[in-house]
Length: 304
Image (cartoon, rainbow, N blue to C red):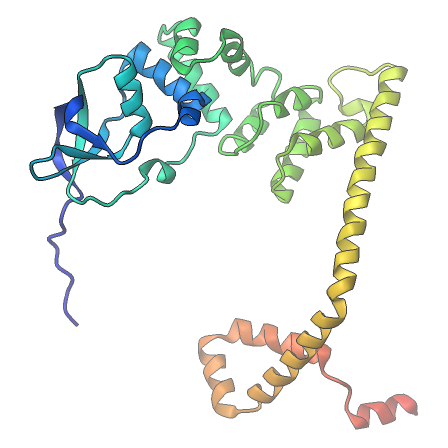
């Protein structure tokens, strides 16, 4: 077998070029809706406050300038701000590849720690808010996001994608209640605020951060009944859906098991699977035995 060549062609040129904005030709024009979007407003504010962080990606066209492959919103922001030049990465292929779709977005807990590091470094909250095109109150909310949250919960949620509204709900529980709730979230892979509110509503007073008054306890009980009622309705709907397909599913499974049972009677097939796939073979045999009809001898013994 031939060895793959070690000389792979680089996807980009090694140097970043500074190009006139007029020499770059976008592949598409930005729509009015895109220019009104919150994402574009954040990009515009960021470029205005601290400049362009991520260069544009372009491809050289013979005698016709450069084709813009990635960074159309950044390109529009630079035009609005009156920039004449821009740093660019030059691609060696004209493939229109959406690079940012391959970038992992930063979870809220990680954003909090990055924000805290920026503030410790002397960056004012007002500057951060202007860069991100948000209110200072939103920045302060993120700064205070983990206040009252125990370290174990912070560690469990560090890499999770979730809503900021989850933390005020967890803050109403003591540390042990927070840990128990988040452990259930991890097991269910459900980090919704609704699930956290359900757990809060059914938690005993001993797990709450503050002792509830009788009125608050009644409100929690009512909320728990409503949320659990919604869960019950969902379970009923799921059961109805299962009932509708149960007969067909069982028939399909029975026919499949009968076919596999005949297949496993072939010695060559069974010996091959025992050598190379013993685990799946054992699992399939267990399933087949559960659906195999009783033999005539077994029926006679049962009748006696």
